[in-house]
Length: 199
Image (cartoon, rainbow, N blue to C red; front, side, top):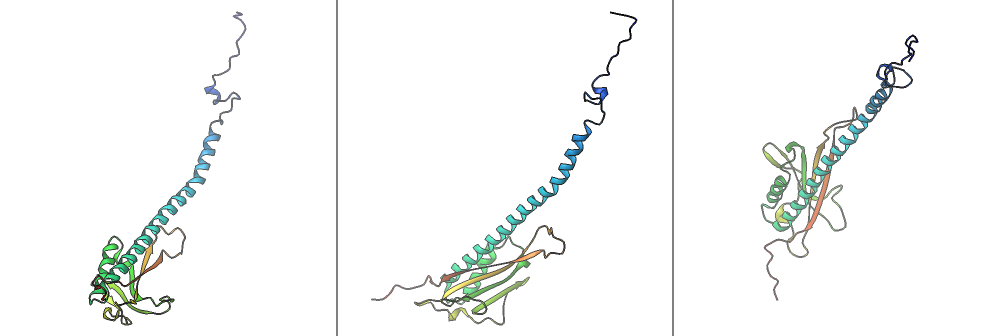
C-alpha cells in the first residue's frame, strides 16, 4: 500500500441521503406522495362509511314501521267491532315503536280498504296523532269500531303509519335533514269471537 498517495473515500450511504446518487431528497418524495394519496382517499372513505351508517339507520326505521303496521292490522282484525278496538291497535303500535323517537311518529290511520281501491286520496278511516298526553282522534274520523262488519263478508282493515326519519349527518348543505316513511298493512277482519256456523 502506498502511504504517500491520498485515498479517495466515498462517504457512507446514510450521509449521501440513502441513495446511490447522493441526493438528499430521495426519501421525501415517496413520503409526500403517500400523504397526498391519504388526503385524497380519506374523504371518500368517510363518505362511504357515513353512507352505510345512514342507510342502515333508515332501513332499520323502515322495517320497524312496517312491522308495526302489520302488528296493528292483525290486532285490529282480531278486535273486530269491539269498542276498544282502536285502543288495542294503538297500544300495539306504541309497544312496537317504543325505541323510536316519540315526536317523530306523525300519524296513524285505521281505515277500511274498499275492494279494488286504495285509501288515497280519501277513504273511511279513523286518524290519530299523539302528543305528550297520548293519542288524539282527528275530527275528520268517520269509521267507529262499532260500524265494522264482522260477519261474512267482513271488512278489510288497514293500518297506515307516517313516521319522520331524521338523518344522522346532513352531508349536503341546505338539504332537508329528514324524510317521511309511510307504510301500511291490510288484513281481513276475523274476530276471535266468531261462533261456529249453524247447520
